[in-house]
Length: 393
Ligand SMILES: Cc1ncc(COP(=O)(O)O)c(C=O)c1O
Image (tube, rainbow, N blue to C red):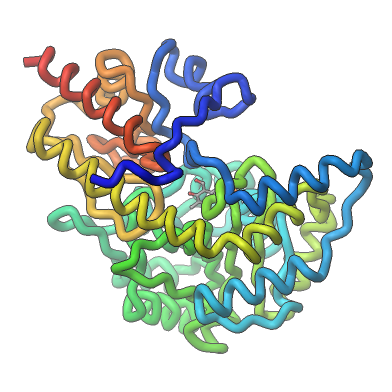
C-alpha cells in the first residue's frame, strides 16, 4: 500500500472544538476511543482554502457578509466541468448546511401531517427533519442482496400513488455507498414526474465518487425531471469544510424556487458567515487536483480496510462503497446482538463507529466506519479490532 501521500500526515485535532475528537468521550461514554464516526475528515483542507481564509482573517473586520457573484460563477463552473451539468446561475442559492436546507424545503413544500418518503438505512436527519417538523415519515427501505443495495421502485410507486408528495433522496447514498446508475435515476425521475412528487436530492457526496463510477445529478437527466427536483450540494464533505456551514441549493423550477426563498426569509436563514464563501470559492476554483488525490487515497483506504479485515475475520464484510468516505460494515455474522454491537467496538476495541441502527432498523448488525483519515489510523483501528475479537474467543 502507498504510504507517501500528504493525506498520511497525522494532524492532532484534539482541543480544536471538533465534535469528532473532542466530543468522542461524551458521545461514547469512554476515554481513548478512536473516533471513526461523524462524517468529516482528519485532513487539512486544500492549501488554497487555508490561504484564502488566512487572508480574509487578517483583514480584521468581520461584519455582515455579502455573497459574491464570483462564488456563484465558481459553483456553476464546477458543476459543468465536474458533473457535466449546465445550470443557470439564477437557480443557485446557498444555505447554512444541507440539513438546514432540507428542513427549509420540507417546511416550504409540505404541511404538518403530509407524507415524506425516506429510503433507509439512511443518514438519520432524513427522518428527523420530517418528524421534528410534524410530517409523517414513510419508509421505502433499500433492498439488500449479497451485500449490494438497490431501490425498491415498485414499492416507491405504491407510496407515491397513495399520496406522498416529497421524497428525501440520498445520492450518493450514505451509509451504503451506492452511486446510483443512470437507469436507476431515470426510473426514479419518471415516477416523480408521473405522481407529481418533489424530490429533495441530497447530493452532498456527489464529488466523492470513486474512479470506477460517475455521479449523475438527478435534475440533470432532463428538463422535465429537473422541474421536480431540489438539489443540495456542498463543498463541505468534498473539501472538509463542514464547520463553515455553506451548501448549494439548485432549483430549476421557478415556483419551487420562490417557495424555498420565501421559507428561507421566514426562518431568517439567508446569511452566511464571512469565511464560508471565501473558502468555498477557493476550493471550487483551485481544489480539483487536491480532490483527485483525495479520491485516490480514499480508494486506497477502502482496499486497505478490506485487506486487513480479510486477515482478521471473515465475519465482518465491507459493503463495497462506490464513493463517500464512510464504509458500511456488515457484522451480522459476529453473533453479537445488534443492540450490543456498537458498545462491543467502543468498550472492547476502543473504536467509535456509528451504530447501524441509527440509520434505521435495516442497519441492525451493521456499523458505519469513517475512513476519511490517515491510513495509519485505520491500521490502529484494525489492530484494536483484531485484539478485541481474539479476546472474545
Ligand atoms: C447525506 C448527508 N446529507 C447531509 C449531511 C450533513 O450536511 P450539513 O452538515 O451540510 O447539514 C451529511 C453528513 O454526513 C450527509 O451524509
